[in-house]
Image (cartoon, rainbow, N blue to C red; front, side, top):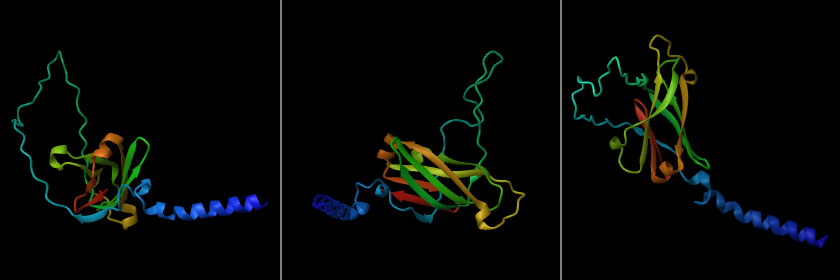
Length: 174
Protein backbone atom coordinates (compact mmCIF):
# COMPACT_ATOMS: atom_id res chain seq x y z
CA UNK A 1 0.00 0.00 0.00
CA UNK A 2 2.77 2.42 0.92
CA UNK A 3 4.55 1.57 -2.29
CA UNK A 4 1.53 2.50 -4.47
CA UNK A 5 1.07 5.80 -2.66
CA UNK A 6 4.78 6.59 -3.03
CA UNK A 7 4.80 5.75 -6.76
CA UNK A 8 1.65 7.76 -7.45
CA UNK A 9 3.06 10.77 -5.57
CA UNK A 10 6.40 10.50 -7.41
CA UNK A 11 4.53 10.31 -10.75
CA UNK A 12 2.42 13.35 -9.86
CA UNK A 13 5.52 15.38 -8.97
CA UNK A 14 7.31 14.30 -12.16
CA UNK A 15 4.35 15.29 -14.34
CA UNK A 16 3.97 18.64 -12.62
CA UNK A 17 7.58 19.41 -13.53
CA UNK A 18 6.73 18.97 -17.23
CA UNK A 19 4.71 22.20 -17.37
CA UNK A 20 7.69 24.09 -18.79
CA UNK A 21 7.83 21.70 -21.76
CA UNK A 22 4.98 23.62 -23.38
CA UNK A 23 7.19 26.72 -23.92
CA UNK A 24 10.46 24.93 -24.72
CA UNK A 25 12.15 24.47 -28.12
CA UNK A 26 11.78 20.70 -27.72
CA UNK A 27 8.02 20.94 -28.25
CA UNK A 28 7.33 20.58 -32.03
CA UNK A 29 4.36 22.96 -31.85
CA UNK A 30 6.80 25.82 -31.05
CA UNK A 31 9.12 25.33 -34.03
CA UNK A 32 7.33 28.01 -36.04
CA UNK A 33 5.68 30.95 -34.32
CA UNK A 34 2.28 32.44 -34.98
CA UNK A 35 1.85 34.10 -38.34
CA UNK A 36 1.69 37.86 -38.64
CA UNK A 37 -0.09 39.92 -41.29
CA UNK A 38 1.57 42.76 -43.15
CA UNK A 39 0.81 44.69 -46.34
CA UNK A 40 2.09 43.16 -49.55
CA UNK A 41 5.06 44.77 -51.23
CA UNK A 42 5.18 45.22 -54.97
CA UNK A 43 6.97 42.35 -56.69
CA UNK A 44 9.95 43.26 -58.77
CA UNK A 45 9.48 42.51 -62.42
CA UNK A 46 12.03 40.18 -63.88
CA UNK A 47 13.05 40.41 -67.47
CA UNK A 48 13.94 37.13 -69.08
CA UNK A 49 16.79 37.16 -71.54
CA UNK A 50 14.96 35.69 -74.57
CA UNK A 51 12.48 36.95 -77.10
CA UNK A 52 8.96 35.94 -76.02
CA UNK A 53 7.76 35.78 -79.63
CA UNK A 54 10.19 33.02 -80.61
CA UNK A 55 9.26 29.59 -79.26
CA UNK A 56 12.01 27.70 -77.46
CA UNK A 57 11.20 24.39 -79.09
CA UNK A 58 9.36 23.92 -82.33
CA UNK A 59 6.82 21.20 -82.87
CA UNK A 60 6.86 19.19 -86.06
CA UNK A 61 4.66 16.48 -87.48
CA UNK A 62 7.29 13.93 -86.45
CA UNK A 63 7.92 15.06 -82.89
CA UNK A 64 5.48 16.82 -80.66
CA UNK A 65 6.45 18.26 -77.31
CA UNK A 66 4.11 17.45 -74.44
CA UNK A 67 1.88 20.40 -73.67
CA UNK A 68 2.33 21.86 -70.22
CA UNK A 69 -0.87 22.51 -68.32
CA UNK A 70 -1.26 26.21 -67.60
CA UNK A 71 -2.99 27.12 -64.34
CA UNK A 72 -5.27 30.12 -64.88
CA UNK A 73 -5.78 30.96 -61.20
CA UNK A 74 -5.68 34.51 -59.90
CA UNK A 75 -4.42 35.64 -56.46
CA UNK A 76 -6.90 35.43 -53.59
CA UNK A 77 -7.78 38.82 -52.07
CA UNK A 78 -6.55 38.31 -48.48
CA UNK A 79 -4.68 35.71 -46.48
CA UNK A 80 -6.44 35.30 -43.12
CA UNK A 81 -4.60 32.36 -41.51
CA UNK A 82 -1.28 30.58 -41.95
CA UNK A 83 0.00 27.61 -39.98
CA UNK A 84 3.03 25.37 -40.40
CA UNK A 85 2.55 21.92 -38.89
CA UNK A 86 5.50 19.56 -38.56
CA UNK A 87 5.19 15.93 -39.65
CA UNK A 88 7.66 13.07 -39.53
CA UNK A 89 8.66 13.60 -43.19
CA UNK A 90 8.58 17.42 -43.29
CA UNK A 91 5.80 19.95 -42.77
CA UNK A 92 2.31 20.86 -43.97
CA UNK A 93 1.65 24.51 -44.73
CA UNK A 94 -2.07 25.29 -44.27
CA UNK A 95 -3.55 28.56 -45.48
CA UNK A 96 -7.00 30.14 -45.26
CA UNK A 97 -7.87 32.99 -47.58
CA UNK A 98 -10.75 35.35 -48.30
CA UNK A 99 -11.91 35.91 -51.89
CA UNK A 100 -13.81 38.94 -53.16
CA UNK A 101 -16.75 36.88 -54.45
CA UNK A 102 -18.35 33.51 -53.85
CA UNK A 103 -17.67 30.49 -56.03
CA UNK A 104 -13.87 30.24 -56.03
CA UNK A 105 -12.59 26.74 -56.78
CA UNK A 106 -9.38 24.83 -57.61
CA UNK A 107 -7.45 26.65 -54.87
CA UNK A 108 -3.68 26.12 -54.95
CA UNK A 109 -0.57 27.28 -53.15
CA UNK A 110 1.72 28.14 -56.06
CA UNK A 111 5.43 28.33 -55.17
CA UNK A 112 7.11 31.53 -56.24
CA UNK A 113 10.39 31.40 -58.08
CA UNK A 114 13.38 31.00 -55.72
CA UNK A 115 15.17 33.98 -57.30
CA UNK A 116 12.29 36.25 -56.16
CA UNK A 117 12.73 35.31 -52.49
CA UNK A 118 15.83 35.92 -50.37
CA UNK A 119 17.66 32.96 -48.82
CA UNK A 120 15.86 30.95 -46.18
CA UNK A 121 12.33 31.97 -47.21
CA UNK A 122 9.74 29.56 -48.60
CA UNK A 123 7.44 31.80 -50.61
CA UNK A 124 4.02 30.84 -51.96
CA UNK A 125 1.07 32.63 -53.53
CA UNK A 126 -2.53 31.55 -52.83
CA UNK A 127 -4.40 31.34 -56.15
CA UNK A 128 -7.87 30.20 -57.15
CA UNK A 129 -10.11 30.08 -60.19
CA UNK A 130 -12.60 32.83 -59.42
CA UNK A 131 -15.74 33.46 -61.47
CA UNK A 132 -16.65 37.11 -62.02
CA UNK A 133 -20.42 36.69 -62.29
CA UNK A 134 -21.22 35.51 -58.75
CA UNK A 135 -22.45 37.60 -55.80
CA UNK A 136 -20.14 38.79 -53.06
CA UNK A 137 -21.98 37.13 -50.18
CA UNK A 138 -21.03 36.94 -46.50
CA UNK A 139 -17.36 36.42 -45.51
CA UNK A 140 -17.92 32.82 -44.36
CA UNK A 141 -19.00 31.76 -47.86
CA UNK A 142 -15.93 33.36 -49.44
CA UNK A 143 -13.33 31.47 -47.39
CA UNK A 144 -10.97 29.13 -49.23
CA UNK A 145 -8.46 26.65 -47.81
CA UNK A 146 -5.31 25.16 -49.28
CA UNK A 147 -2.35 23.15 -48.02
CA UNK A 148 0.97 21.97 -49.39
CA UNK A 149 3.48 19.42 -48.15
CA UNK A 150 7.12 20.50 -47.84
CA UNK A 151 9.93 17.98 -47.46
CA UNK A 152 12.13 17.83 -44.38
CA UNK A 153 15.17 19.16 -46.26
CA UNK A 154 13.30 22.21 -47.55
CA UNK A 155 11.71 23.08 -44.20
CA UNK A 156 15.02 22.75 -42.33
CA UNK A 157 16.68 25.23 -44.72
CA UNK A 158 13.83 27.72 -44.30
CA UNK A 159 13.74 30.32 -41.56
CA UNK A 160 10.45 31.86 -42.70
CA UNK A 161 7.38 30.77 -44.63
CA UNK A 162 5.62 33.53 -46.60
CA UNK A 163 2.23 33.27 -48.33
CA UNK A 164 1.03 36.16 -50.49
CA UNK A 165 -2.45 37.24 -51.47
CA UNK A 166 -3.60 40.18 -53.57
CA UNK A 167 -3.70 42.72 -50.73
CA UNK A 168 -1.59 41.19 -47.95
CA UNK A 169 0.84 38.45 -47.03
CA UNK A 170 1.37 36.34 -43.94
CA UNK A 171 4.74 35.28 -42.63
CA UNK A 172 5.54 32.60 -40.09
CA UNK A 173 9.06 32.68 -38.64
CA UNK A 174 11.05 30.20 -36.66
